[in-house]
Amino acid sequence: MTPNNEVTTPASGMALTTTDLTMRFGKSEVLSKVNLNVPTGSVYALLGRNGAGKSTLLQIALGIQNPTSGSVSVLGMNPQKQGPQLRQRIGYIPERMPLYDWMTVEQIIRFVAEQYRKWSKDEEDRLVAKFRLDRTKKVKDLSRGNIALLLLVMSMSHEPELVLLDEATSGMDAIFRAEFDRTVIETLQEAKHTVVFASHQLRELEFLCDWVGIIHEGKLMLELPVDQLKAEVKTLRLQTSDGTAPPNLPGELARQSIGREYLVTTRHIDPIVNMPANVSLLETIDLTLEQIFVALLSDPGERS
Image (cartoon, rainbow, N blue to C red; front, side, top):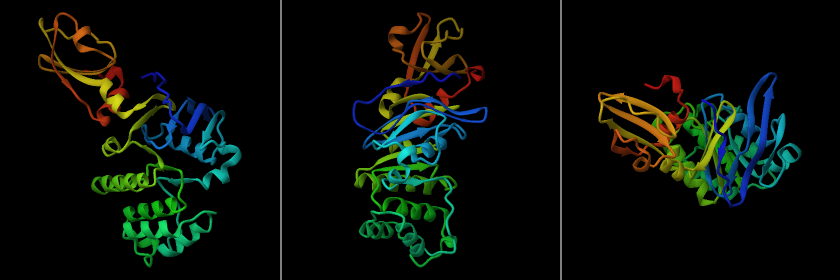
């Protein structure tokens, strides 16, 4: 599938923008001319399969890596030139963060607090109490979920303006993952932070995020408000009068035959105006964000 690089740029201010961002490792191009726009105050889902380039993009935004070409602006700053200052204003939770597991919760929080010029002990205390973390417990004895909550305390107690979560719920079971995501959003929205979730776990994010960007093979396929994307992509249940398969429809993404009926997932189509004469529309089906993601990334050669 060839990404169409379709981007709708919001009119509001931006917390994070990239312009023609490209990253190569040797002959491998991990990011290719990505133009991303994360509105200030938004909860943004950056979606893509493993290896799509999500983590690399966030590391460039943090100033941890330098892009091959293109530019990045984060909170009005250049991460490559102002990385240390910028990271004072950002909270970051990666999929895996090496921790001194021999430390207690209290000791590791104090260690991290020393790295920031601005640290709110009141916010730290509030979050530790909210997440019911035991300050005397050693990190090595914490569950995966409680480690994620500890990272959240350490990433938010300096009151960041932007929080980046890179597959932060990886390894959690579905119930705790949903609870963690809700907790994150609730906690961050209390302080009106901008949040970017980089993930391939979609079920929980659908109800948490207001913007979505989809990266496929290093290219930005689209960037839209979640509600707009869900309004544009639908599955049509069709039947033809002569029993033949319906022709390919404008914006068709995927199809499946079920007896004499066909389920056709389409984008940018008015089914009443554009439906061929021999085709009857039986039903228009709303899709989840996960179903849309699968349809957009499906291989046309695999459609039934």
